[in-house]
Image: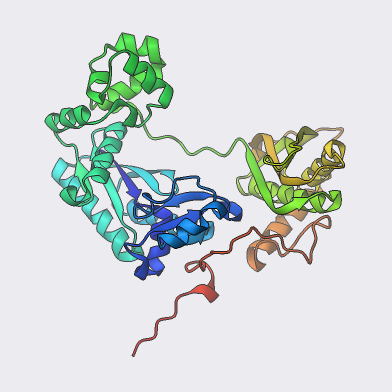
Length: 417
């Protein structure tokens, strides 16, 4: 059997886990630089739309007593890792699907046994992390996702765990589910199916295999069979990233090239560190600059950088990116955002040394030393010379909560009397 664990209102729940006085109160979490709303608790949904611009909704936050938090990705990432660790104790295989969701597989268990395991996972996550989760279990991944939707709709009746264990339950669930709510059915596909008078998931399963394959390719056919209770969508292997990007908006608009160079150098170095962490190298990068899109003179500049060989050296990557940045930079504009994207990525184990035009082999030793020292001393302690050593660039995070689980100084102190 397959299952999925979905953390309810994950970002808000992470904040509540360390501030239980916020349970039942509306919470929103903001994007980088406190730009817009990217997460809401159910209590905040009637008052704030997803994507709402933060500064335009300050009065509504205050009016409805909404608690506002800046994105604390260090905390959320660590809590996610702990959730995955707990799930792994109970299942035969696990596939993290997002920061707050994971599919799992159970072998040789009955529906009742699967339900018991689901309840154990739910209780364990709540006991050790204080995070509420929903668990859906069925014969396939698509049906497990559907079971999870039922839990979200009826949390009290299901006690946050639901198993589609019989064909009768499967058909009932399919007849209840609108086609647009099926996992894997996008907006365009849902529109096409509705034009064919397919409004419910059950009606989709009644279509012939040949019709589904011809109209919606083999991907649609796999989904249909999954909904029929024939597991066809398997677990995906975890692959290294084929693109690595670091992009940020500046706290204020910037027009000085030197200031932008320092920022872009930091982005390039960050990308190179991620590249080395997954034991890969790249042969090209894309660098871009954008002005404020809401300003009068909007401009977007960008260009590819080709290194001529595969590399993971911060020195090589940063040098090439800065040279290209100087080429595309235009005087007379104020810029709000910049970024670096590494492309043409492959494993470093397949590196082919070039007789002419390869980089200095000493770079590899230097990068290993830098990474080792930064791991021990803290990220960003060692920098390249084109980064400002005294200046630490930070995102606007006026509502940032402590990093309770990863920073010693932020650990909660309990006064026991």
